[in-house]
Image (cartoon, rainbow, N blue to C red; front, side, top):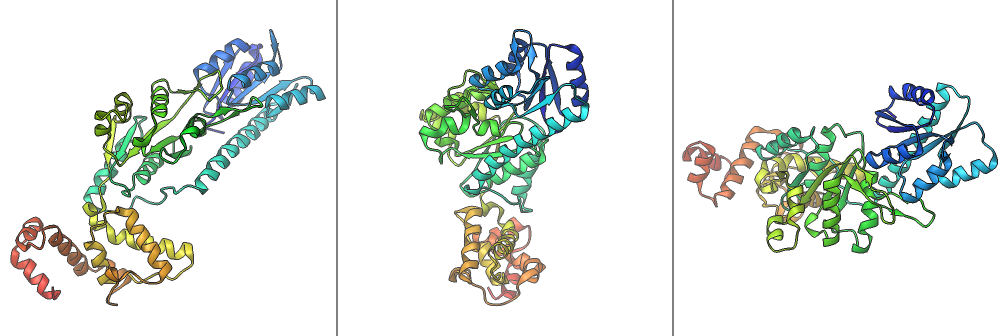
Length: 434
């Protein structure tokens, strides 16, 4: 309730002020309208979660106004204040989509109770719609794990941008955790209690894109909200933006410029309060140069860019990620975890991971299911668990061997990068029988 915006519509100043006073300290925003005309103008200027209106007003009833607004694309719940609640009025109100009645005379607790119930139902419908969608989606959940310098740079930029409304474009190879980073940014922002809605632009059929994103007026003149409206107040994350069809590029550009959305078949453009985040593993500048992506949309998206590092550039995080995935899959599938011994961890660290974090995650999941690592990662039964992960000598060994791989076995170059002598590398390798 505290984050809601409410429009109070009544021709009597005393009633408007009374409702504003009791609601103003409990919700985010309350605005007033003295007439149906003024209320319509308010809806064109800003989005409201709930409208509280009197039924008897000059120039028509509150029910007439709600019915008219529904045809235009009204996206708010409504509470009707009335002195009369006969059967005809009740049926008309239900058809118009009124959430509740409050009979005159009423006290503060009655209106507060009606508002609380209406908002609870509204948020429950929204949460259910988003939950059903996420149940069938491969969402990027989890923590942004790792202590590498490359990931620390990403974290620092995310923390710097979290409190702003600036669009952010996440780039990087497939599997580097772009959606995970976007969710992390949302969790640090003041929108964290509102929805984070992820949309894969490549996964929606072209003939469904408009209704999925922008919503549609259905045959009974009710608005079925799209993902932009369901995300209102929160964050919309558009992934695989390079694969957006031309029609969506044009429509999205207008949304970014006007901060309004017009559902399919609706007359009104509905104001939006959204943070936009984008992601791609493609070269958008090249797509713009080749005429496959709109330059004006690219510049709107690319205000700030965060490039996610490939796993090979943050290899020191591999051990921590592998341990986390092992715990996650063994618990979620009810299967015994595999031992992460020093030999396996060294092999994981030295592998190039062309599929990035997603490839590592899939490897651990597959290995838990099969009960063994593939031969190229199988261990020799040495140190395992915390001892293998935290033992300083093993940590040093993994780091030096990874650097040698990067230097194609050139010990002098590896020593130079480490800031040690060539003899130090030789002694270490001799001690490890390598």
